[in-house]
Image 1 (tube, rainbow, N blue to C red):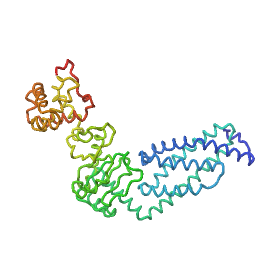
Image 2: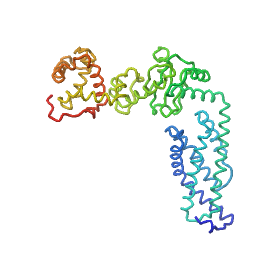
Image 3: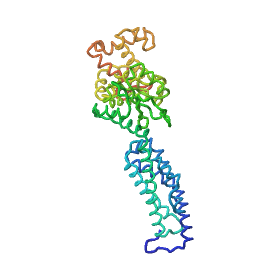
Image 4: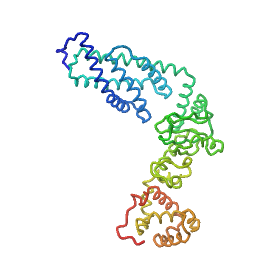
Length: 428
């Protein structure tokens, strides 16, 4: 590109030809410009950082930059279909509860990226682009952006007057308040619930959903359910699922989806319910929770029904305080070092079953799906290695916590990483 002092005067026909060349080069660069724009917006504007925003940003940036490339060759206002798209974007921004400044910040980032690429494209051309023409093209970006922002403002204004959109915003505001930590004020929640037309229950539960199981166009939910499927970590808020009527209403909503239901709590404590639900869902998807994904591989969703976090409270508590339990487990389970590594988990499961079944070999055998005599033979070995310690009631809780950590952190065919192998040859 020439320096300002070396400007080249062009006749109108030559200028138009150069515009077409510049526009064609810009069109070819659109995919790279869009990719860089989306990444910079997601990095610079936290409200768009979630993975669920990527496709929308791709669409908005791709259409705008492609249209601008066309306008470089033929200057004029943006096409009506682009303005219509940006009006819909403005309406969506209102429904998502984002302030007008958020999209404006994203547009400013996108403009900086576009100017950078324009300079690169102009420098890469065989034909020299005069500074005057380059300045005209860059200057045209700003009225172009203004057209788009006016369309966004129109879409926001229309959505703000829409009763359905207003109700959706109020319900999302209520959802955010309920999931906030520290807990929100009860009176404020009651006011928000009234405005959102949500029948405030005495107790409710949060349901964590695996992102990959949420359909692209979610089905409508009954009014007693608050919808958080738009979040990066999707969720629902439902009335106490321990009540039969509420449980029956919940079942079809979760059919075929990987989900975990948190404990039922007072509405102001739903943030805690969601934290437990998300932890349970993550562990189940990793194949950790016993009895939930017994035959599943890591990363696969549960086979049937949602995970009930309260049913796995001991394991969740152990993993929440893993460092402390790990230290205890190394001491209490050290006798297992006398067992061959490939059999340690087998003996650990037998010890846990016996502790949970009150040292009833028949009940433990049924739980382990082995013969009772097999359990008795293993227990003789465990008595030999552990001594009286495993029969001391004051140590049973600590032993069970250690064993739950063992099973929750054991890989198939192995043992926990934190458990040290015996330095000498195992005897059993």
